Image 1 (cartoon, rainbow, N blue to C red):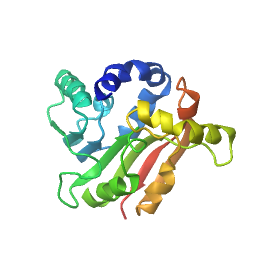
Image 2: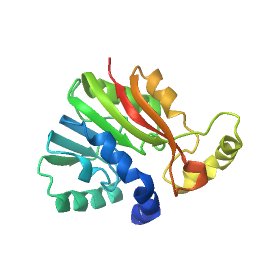
Image 3: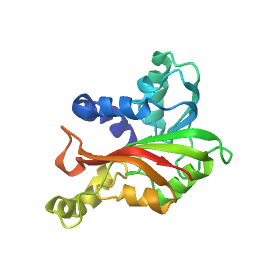
Length: 206
């Protein structure tokens, strides 16, 4: 299943990347600088949007098939200050207070335990360090879309690499002790209807 997902992922996401995600990634990553980690870097869709203000970039991707595509994209990018890690979001291979920024794009939906992952992210961020997030999330409670997300979620998890349709990632970020500094809610255009609700923004470690 991992090989299947990695093969089709970029093709499935291409229309949404063109419609909105590329612009959102560009805006979100523009202020990123210093020592940076990306959690769940996937096939490397963010690489093109890191600037030369990034002194060191660690791209973490535990899935071996995704990681192969990530290695190829990184090599083609010409980004010289980057390395790749196989660490998971729940067990980041770094000391406390290491990073100025951590980015996570379409990741919290599929981690095994969002709370553990976010606590790990907070642990390795420097005080005042920032989490840049872009996630598809649960629709509004009580809405028809949320009802269908809940119904369809078991099947979707099975075929989409543990991706959850109905996670309340904004609340998870707050519960982990972050302060949300900026947040925008918008539809992922050209995506399947059940994955369109999204949030993106910046959260800070106090």
